Image (cartoon, rainbow, N blue to C red; front, top):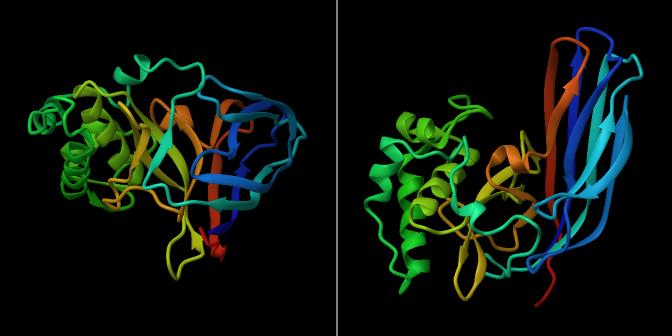
Length: 272
């Protein structure tokens, strides 16, 4: 499948911006599930200073904000060819060791609710994929999809206790439990083709678990399915913060109003 994407992030500040730095993970890269046919990253009201590969092998750009403007617009857009691999991404690469991805982060630290959910699952290595599918269904049932109940700083424990959240929360609950089962797990930011809906309010997020013999395998607990060719991977990390498309490292300009507009559309079906 060929998927066209435009992801625009717009900031309106109540004061002129004379200084600031932001980290962008807004450039997808090739993997077993996708090939980048073309991609462009642009910034209005700022400048791209440098690009590099981070510890998770994400393509990262640093931008400076210092034009004195009150508005910043960041746009990533391009065309991706995707393939249905039943969620299997493959071998681990990059500088982040697997043992680190088996340990909790601040956002995925288990509490009583996560521990109680994990107690319902056991992994002796004989049927790991089936156990993870059961876990995915359980998380989908335990956390009802509802916008506005959680935010970027919401932990997996809080989301599970609340019983409401969005894809980010489903993914982090799933990751927290998988790690308690002794499996390395990570967060994936990206995009999803939604039938009949091109305009979206945000990107998508799901989880990947490193399964012996298969490598990284994706699980989207928000939709209770493994990613197929309707998904585009953007960045990965230990949790949402580690894979967020835009992160402010230092920001002037006072208070800001943020708006995000994402367009994701299928362009062409590619015969396998």
